[in-house]
Amino acid sequence: MPLKHSHFLPIALALAGVFLFSVMDAVMKAQALAMGTFSAMFWRNAMGALFAATLYLPFRPKKPSEAAFKLHVGRSALTAVMMYLFFFGLTRIPLAQAIGLTFIAPIIALFLAAPFLGERIGPNVKLAALLGFGGVMVVVGGDLLSINANTDLLGVSAIVAFSVMYAINLILQRKLALIAKPKEITFYQNTFVLLLMIPFAPLLLLMPANELQWGGAILAGLVAIGSLILMSIAYRRAEAQQLITTEYTAFIWAALFGWWIFGETVSPQTLVGTGLIMLGCIVSARKATPRFGHTPTEEPSP
Image 1 (cartoon, rainbow, N blue to C red):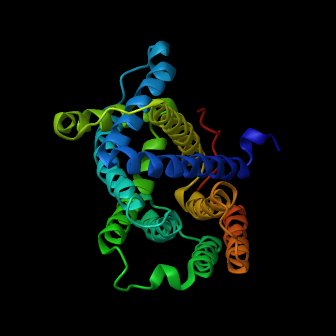
Image 2: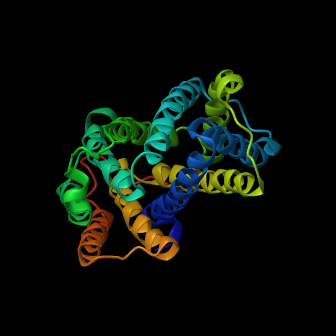
């Protein structure tokens, strides 16, 4: 079977997209702590918009359809709010705890896929979601659920609110990917989010103070663009329910980055949980039986 027609290719692309997004999470936490959430997000989007424009505009693209333009605007507004909440939450609670909390998003999105996308949720996907969520619970254990006097409820609330919005975003991502090309999606999302932030810049924006902060903004913009393009291609080629479980692998990267960069110990429960997460991805990747009346079509070009 040619690689471009394989049902495993969208999963591989989504996994790569999650990895790049995880890299951005680590960079953005450092950036937000250094210059504040708004400034870190503004410069990430400024760099992202610049890189996206160089990939999209030289090819003299056609004007987006009316349906695509409305989705671009709506999804960008949602993205601006949810990403601010996420980066704000990262400055107040540990990265692993924040990532763990976001994993309620795939579960919500999984069941939104039926009413909003018309996807029939198969038993493989339900099992994959259960395995993935169970793996996260094994990894984060009591730390995620323990609420005490030292718990930053504002940070936790911001991440939970982000997770609900991100679930909706995953559904919109699938709808948009079916009618717009990846480069178009990448350009308009970064540009529109930046435009939404500009009115607040005179009051909140800080310039990067040194080369390290400029480098962080550039790196965050690059990996964000790469992640968005990969995820757009993946969601163009496969149903949302098949790809949602790949979101759980973000915790794997969080654990590995913590061990590699910060010298954090990887516990046995992390290894067990990681195994469950990966098993969930494998179960989700199993090709489902086509729905009644559905016939395969040629793969859309990216």
